[in-house]
Image 1 (cartoon, rainbow, N blue to C red):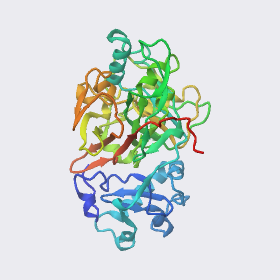
Image 2 (image 1 turned 45 degrees about the horizontal axis):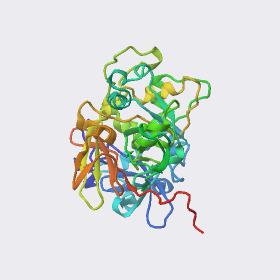
Image 3 (image 1 turned 120 degrees about the vertical axis):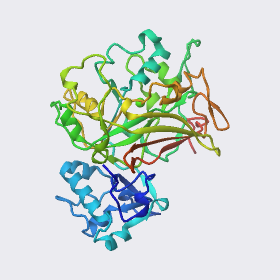
Image 4 (image 1 turned 45 degrees about the vertical axis):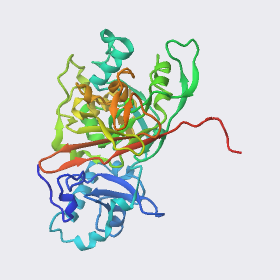
Length: 421
Ligand code: CA
């Protein structure tokens, strides 16, 4: 597949995240105006709410774009998703006859504020990257017991909190929590000293499933609307004390940051790839009928306040052992219903080499091997550091990107229970 040329020059730049092939879905506002739906194209956002209002976009069963989130479009289903892409492509491609009517609805991206692109109905986080699971398991339990006995059979996950999902650019306050080190006899309540990131992809569920009715991997793939970058902020010291036996709780509940753009599955279609070779056979309900992972190049950058950023990790989504459709199919085996707006975190995406590790805990090996950043070293996040995830699929002369997934960690409250009078 090659670049689809648009009449917007910046959309034809091979370095843009947002060529006409991409058309990712976001929500934006200008100044005090109400937020509205748009798609990123080159250096601009196309105001879809206005285009639908003016009849330049006319979707079967619509309107869908009159609310400041994408859930209605998602719920409308794959035929509407395809019709939307087809109509927007026709408006923007080189030589499009409606250029003069469309052009007034392009807004420079630098002039606007981006918001959460969809209402998150529920959030589930998985632990499906093998390199990450082996690294963390080795640190916690030793190399012999690194992978739990179920790991090669089940995409392990836990139910997180939709209320904690925030859009890129939202500041993240260092949390307080209960911690107890191995040398301490009693726990303490204090600000987390081992605050961390997790480099993940998020799958956005666009179609619901029926309570009591499991779905196949193929059906699960069809239910997914698109993907976002996802940083699952994690307090390792809180996690280490609380996680047995029910898994993470408050360690993961501070915030989960997503990129402002949902890249639709159709834009990623040319980059489908298979999950890695199975080390043990999976039960039939988890078999992938065709490639369901994507070749997406990922990186993490850390910038201390007022200092240039350093790229601290590079990896690829194709390192995941389980794909999002496998995770979604597994999620429904109990009869659990999935809803429009469900968000699935992939689990941390690390690769085989040290520079491929998708968390600071792995990069610094639990703090024992601090790594260099501009102006110093890091083991875990320090106050006022900004962490940014980036990702793109590389096509022939174009790329499909997600925009930055970024957040600054601000200092913990002096007293979390102090109340203003
Ligand atoms: Ca996670």
